[in-house]
Length: 411
Image 1 (tube, one colour):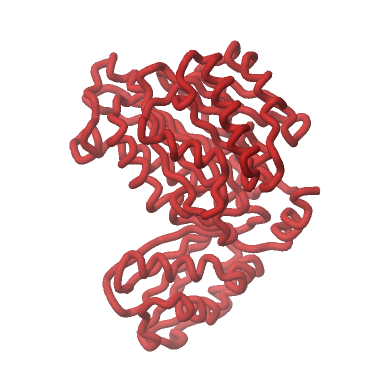
Image 2 (tube, helix red, strand yellow):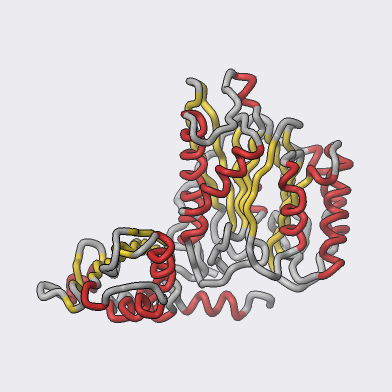
């Protein structure tokens, strides 16, 4: 599997987040010669928030997190790669329970204060004994620094680790927001994406954290697609340790006050950065494509039209072939089921207007559009001519390597 052409030349160095310590290791769950298990420990005042897949076949770790997220207290996060622990029946639930029990005993907390996430192959039983004996070693190696290790340990078919950080001033004091994510295929989020975790030392109430998490994913992880498939394990979680409170930062309970707005903006920036990295690491991807739909009846209508374009195999293969086939975009607008005026539709590839008022632009030059399509990052804009609402989503192309990766995924 070739490394994504969008892989960063150097990874960002994430600063410590007060109240967060991390350790990762090779547990041999499915992979050999690479890390696949991460433990994150939090100070007692940390709160947790999260959004999870709406899939009707959600994995056991998702069910566990959903059950305990409302109580809002977090002392530990355990993440494994290689096995999704999805569609595993009572064995899956038992594996989650045993993992939480073992972690709680080592960290010194209640089991419901341990959050768990898994990613990898669906339908294979996860034996917790393969890694629970590693937890004692991880607890002994907890450290504020190894963010890159954690990002690598949650990867499956990813070709590079995904990290992002922002620093924001609240009450004149620096507050840190760090994030890691994994995702490459089976990406069409419905409340979240494969796995993403954001950490801050800001003092937040659980309700404020939950609101920021829900609002933060709306135009980030919920606005991306690689292949149109929603995972059984989609999870985005936000952990706030509150440690910045000791440095003079006031507790944030309202997302609309100055501190709440500033922090929510930083969290959304981190989520967007991570979401874009997921698309840029889409399995076999060679193009990163922004699709904007304007002139729609509502934002939801604009988003549905945009996803109709972004998920079309015909359009995605045209991107791969660097073909400015705008007729396929007209097709995708029409099949979306939302209002669109055929005789007012306009389409742009970058700054090149290829169609206006329902027909080819009289000044359109195919060679110019073909040259534009050779770029690694593309912007497509469509005006459907029925309103004033707009939405943007991000996608990638569909290449033969995507087929090769997924044909051999369990081999």
